[in-house]
Length: 483
Image (cartoon, rainbow, N blue to C red; front, side):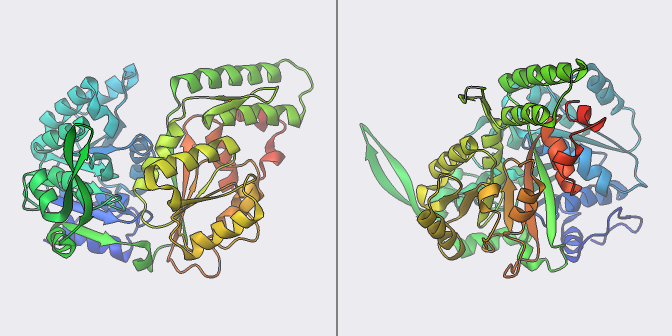
């Protein structure tokens, strides 16, 4: 079906985005398997606009991980939503602030497109389920539900997956989006497609699907026996069965993409982090207001401690490191689940690097990851680069201060900044380990993990504007860093 004649674009789509939109916009169920950096968010937004113009929907419920769902309202919609369509948008929070509750009530009488974003974790709890149910019941027959980073529902036995699939049946249109739908194997595809429709793959039973595409062997452990997946079969058949309701494109195929694509992934601080952060910030503000002479080193020390707190630890005056609950690690694993191929992960602190290495080894195996930081000796560093560039190593974890010079890491086109240094040179040089001669990908994707309303945002803003942080830690701008 042709796109509505009155559809306009706020941002011009690239060729692959327009092709995907034209093929998918009118379909009830569709999978956007566009690799990270290929612009799947815009395709979904343009799909909603097209369906609204065609008189098919009045509302969108967007489900995404914690680090993403607010971005849709704060960044993606303002960037891509057509100016000629009235829209009201918000995101769910529990407990909801009074001003948010007032905003949600406006949805009922609003004349235009209603957009609500929810974090996928909310579907594990009664409050989130209750809110989602009321929203879906109000607009279900004229509702599009989209799941961003849909591998978050790959576990068919998880309660939130079951809840989302059940609620999704009430929507008129359904979309799933992810760069890599099968991070651990074809079995991950089942529940994602089941959300779209249990009939798309031809199997309404997970066990029948597993028996068709997985090689199973009987194992015995203790006093019980169980079946274990040892391999896969009929993958060409599975690939063909997915084609009618999916669109797949990688960065290498998008010759019209810009050379560098930047994204942020929001991280919510734990309660303990929030408490310590507020306490440290209040002390810094009190110091500035005291009227005493405050030197740049004193300010940098305070900023450093604030940054450490957002990164999950705190180093005391005597050098002791205190570990804090660190949602940043979970956020990193969520990001990596949506990226195919090799990935470079930069982190500022030894504390974080060691924890990242452990998390990756536990999840993907020790042979999948190498390190490049102060504790890595010269021989290990050479082996790390060689294994990453020419071998089977998938993850390169390093410190920008250590790895910013003399390295070529063009085997990857995906870079995640677990944290950023205050040094502009560290950022620009570490970016260029990938973005250099020998890089054959059409674009390089950079993802920054950022804790909202913290010094993290100030650091990113300064680095993106190519300003040296040390040069702005003075005068009136000083206090802004602690606001």
